[in-house]
Length: 280
Image (cartoon, rainbow, N blue to C red; front, side):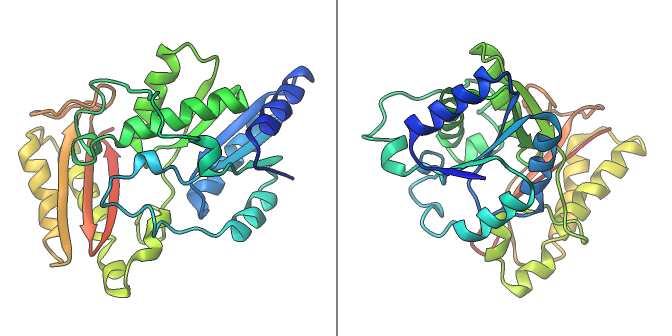
């Protein structure tokens, strides 16, 4: 497995693989791998001849008061896991190489970032689409794999990829969960033991709301009240947002239908958790 830090070297490596007719796969990450990441690596390994894992904690997608400095990092551990899951290359550029100066060029997908995390984290998705576009240009992948836990991110990246005519297949990997239902996330490491004990209430509430929908309830406020009731079982939760949105355009709904998504963002202590469930 190669470890590449230089952008020109990564570009040259990608071109060499493409010249040989290989299908290049990309799993973009910010590191601190867990089973959610490795499940995406498995998909990439199955579908690509040459698999690149990018590892870059992207400052553009963090707000000024967010957790960029404390975001978990462990490069040695990540290397071992990438090697275990048979990645061909880790691309780990420096911040000064990816952003030599304050960047004047940004990539923004309008409308889809108005709601959910886009509303509570202004500029976040502009940072995501900018870094993904840069990775696309450097690595030249034929396919890129993203996890559905970050559902809004997946929809926005898919839209960007299509509209900018990147010849790249965007693949969705399923949300991977702990045994008690908590969606795996690098930030889960920051939960205290008491917070971790309360964390499954989020997914349990989403499941209850989905069951209520399957039983015939279409009123969004009633579905969200069911989710709220679950979260209120612990005083540790602070709600950022709860919403039912269209599954493709992400606008809020008043009456739910199949294909819509119940999405939530909450704080447990200082740790922000997101999760979603598709109404199907």
